Image 1 (cartoon, helix red, strand yellow):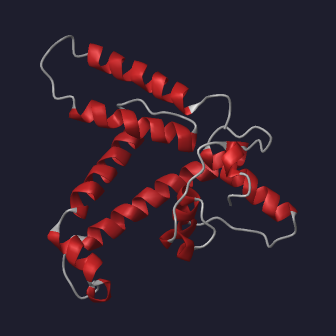
Image 2: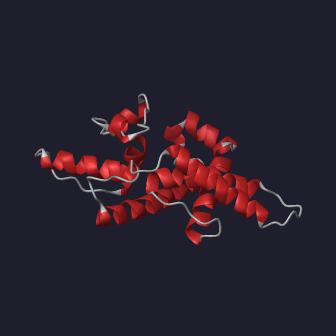
Length: 184
């Protein structure tokens, strides 16, 4: 994927993290937020090509959504919903908030995918989304039915599976373009 390895992306983010910590000028500070931004930014650079500044509004919103999702997953209502999903529509609770958060996350990712579609260079994929979109183009060129991208496809893009039922099976995501050959 592009010319930057995962290691280079991690090193770049480590430099940004150190710079953010320097901005505190040795004053006591809670590093929780800054330390949680770093791995999220590495993942964003692999998926979306770019990292975010720690004060970027879209990035802050993404971080808030992810943090809220992780918090909610441990709520008793969520565990009850996971145990009895058929009763979920009848039960009050936080599981409904998770659905809303997931929709917002899908919107965020779909927006990034659409940006990638506008500037895609299939011969030079720069990130995971470029690899996915390039593979979609190959499938289209082989005469398979045209494919329209929607929010429902976001989990498939991130897991690399063709069908939703596949998501329950082994979730093996390629780590390099060479591994992605024949993946989608």
